[in-house]
Length: 417
Image 1 (cartoon, rainbow, N blue to C red):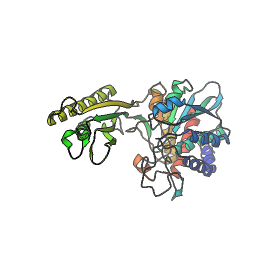
Image 2 (tube, rainbow, N blue to C red):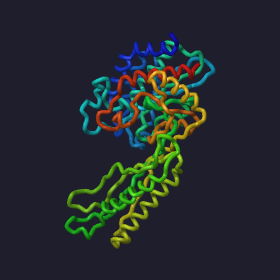
Image 3 (cartoon, rainbow, N blue to C red):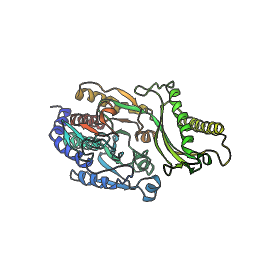
Image 4 (cartoon, one colour):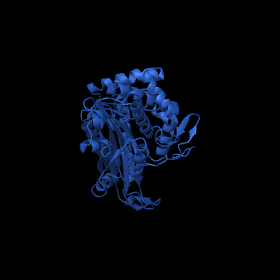
């Protein structure tokens, strides 16, 4: 029996245990917001300690977390040193998730299994890969423990807010500097590039007034509508800006949250919009942000002119950047990762996973920006839509979880040999 077959057999023999591990992780909520994620880190550390994995607990200072808009963050590093020389390979998955929302037919924190799939928030993105990566490392050490190099598990809790207090904080503090890294992903493709993301908060100021005398006020909501129409019109232009990266098409903009007004019978005096602009790798983030600010300013100016508003009786806006996540572009050093995952993906799944880009943005960019080659690969379906990530009834097909764990274990064996 080959080493690869022995790795596969070990994973098969321990798969029920792996499934129970994932269920236990899903059953500890990590809704972000509010972002009270330290309890999940504590639970993860306790579970993996039974297998001899001692997790370093790196709590981000409370003041930094509160200023960031979250409650608690404890990032975990599990170091598995094997000997002097060789590579250090990091495996990163994030435990923070968006709140469940409505429409679930299964308990979002139950981890129930129906027709070969586990249901629950983060079963696909990305508590599943806490288990994929942990059991791949366990299999490797049980079957073919490396003689040199090291593997690190990075379990972090800030992907939904941009990663700066997750992997970004670990890297900035000098707590880790691997040679290569693999981040949580799906099973049917190797992602080598991804979009960037710019998120902004636009506060539209008008003047409150009684709804019976609307002419005495300045309707901030009408001003916001003018801004939204101008921003959405940009999407038509974005379709002409195409990426050369397979898997990535063109930029787009979304307004994901609107807040404002005080009551039904009051002209709104303030409305807040939160927008999300996805940037293809070829775009310049500074130019993208400048363009959005210009579009907003022009929309406000036109709105005020059309209604004869001036001075204090004019709509005005404040614009704040919430997040700037740069796009991920491939580093030449990622070839060993891509080659190994493609080879073993074909052997285990029966078809070669293509190397592509994704319109998502991820924490991998934070490693790549520091010169650490990385790719995205893990347990999951062919598309985000199939996984129901960020929607009701998120799920992972257990056979994908099993096979992805084998691919990662085989890949680690190649990288550490």
